[in-house]
Image (cartoon, rainbow, N blue to C red; front, side, top):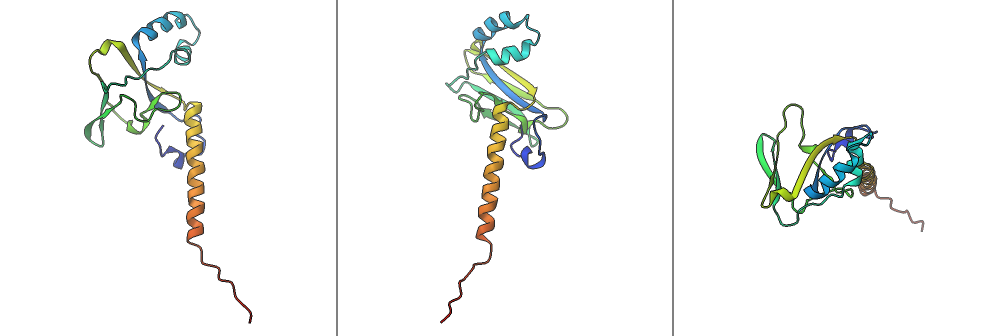
Length: 155
């Protein structure tokens, strides 16, 4: 979810979010064989398979953003949510979008999935925390700019 979306939309529970997840290929294959018969295999998979991000600097994502191709190192992930998804919504715009996930050797160990979804409970909690922090900051700023109250003394 775009970090500033909470400024514009009051109820974001049905907003669109785009996240990147990273799994060990071996774990993914094992869990997919079990959840493949589930009525909702995608949700079952996301809730069952532990995410594992490489920590050796071998993973990056390339994208076109603001008219330029940019690469962002993802190992370890820079800002994953508590549920270990990397929110890339801020890089998605109307029209064509290009994401290139690049692995260093050995690339077969990990599999990344880019998926669209409604905000997770963790993302909703993060937005609520940002809103509360923003409101507190606005309150503190307004108290700084109000006229000083100088007591009058009677002699």
